Image 1 (cartoon, rainbow, N blue to C red):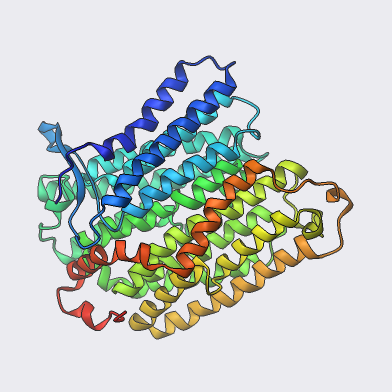
Image 2: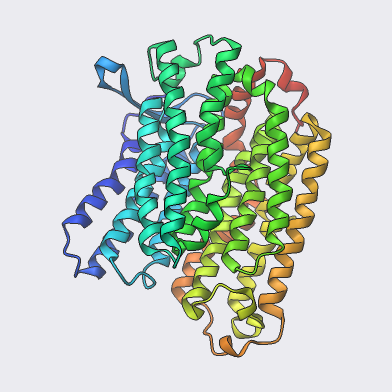
Length: 500
């Protein structure tokens, strides 16, 4: 591992937390000052990620920028953080997402402004903490810490059914987390440490691996969310304010997939291999089921929410292909989904602020009313479908390539999800933008400079990854190869790797 000479990861975690503490000291009547502090904190955090991007060693699978200090000596708990190719892009995406959430909420949040922006910034610090933690006890602290502000964001600033959605989200996540905590305790008893790197050297019996895999699965599958524990997601997405939906889509549901990669595969490799058919089956069901459900939705936001179930099914399909192409595709698709679905929720939030309706039938002819907005939306629509030249294509291509190497039947059935996705997304676009102009929306104004500033970075990423994905794939490859070596040994992955 490469130790940090400067505590860059600690700053990424605690600048938002300290920024939230600073906002707590400001009078709630100074709403403009609170917003500017939130923006300054999120921008500062984003700037702190630049050294990670520029100094990240793509050729090393070791942990980098490592900080390790004794925390609770009697329990052998350490403040142990670091990143590798599996986590670095998620840290970058978390920082970018926080800025966009602050900006999109600038004018739309009218009540309890101080508390809202404190919650957003606390979520940012917790998200980054999850992706940097190497000590499992520390990971669990950040994993649970994020639950509280997200619960408040949905429950206080959400729609008319916000309480139901918030409680459902809380209970699903809490039950899964408690089961994972039991698994963490069992791991600690087996290895007398919470250090992930040391736990990987502990030889666990196969039956114990199976038990632990399912205990961790309970938490990770809920977060993804995998079928059949996905039902909290549409409610939470639909009722959350725009910023809450963006955080859920861009980052929170990626934590489950990240958990599989960081903990389930390296700690329980035999169980992961044995349960691959089950995980592939659940993934394919999610892909097809989620897509079919999208086709009958009348709520703009709920349709995009269910599309996340389908898209994350592709991610888990890639992960449990257990080969380099599949896992690289899954990781890249985690980033792609965060960018594209986050952008779609931002777009929905922009028109909702103008119309105060999410019903698809209340729109129509939006292309002639908001031409710039319509142009941006079609690019994100194409990216969601996976059109070549957009970021969605390369992720799905690698996933299907890896999936076919593992299970041709699973890959073929999953491919139908792409067709279903094209149907519901293009049909959505046709109904909202190309039918006769609805009288209710004929006077809407096109995107404002602020809204354009929010969407342009995501547009750039959609095209950048779509045209030249190697910038990002090169950051993943070495760590993914090391993970496959851990799961299979040093030879099997060679036969499952497409030689680029």
